Image 1 (spheres, rainbow, N blue to C red):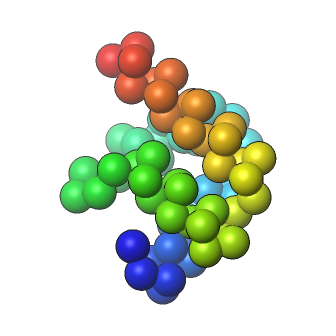
Image 2: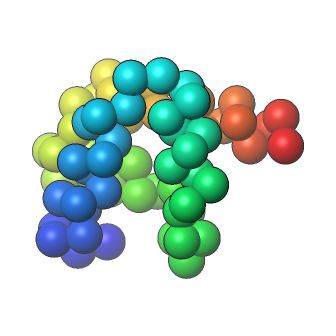
Length: 67
């Protein structure tokens, strides 16, 4: 993911207050990329904290495992 796209994704991710927000994001995710990798890319650019990365990755894994 390039930095410009990561900035857009990170802005969305920073606004997630609950698991429901993550679920809604996954529903509109383009499926051209892996959402977990998108989260990790944002963290690697320093656009989200490692704590937020961990929370979001865990939520995505929980949501996907319940599908």
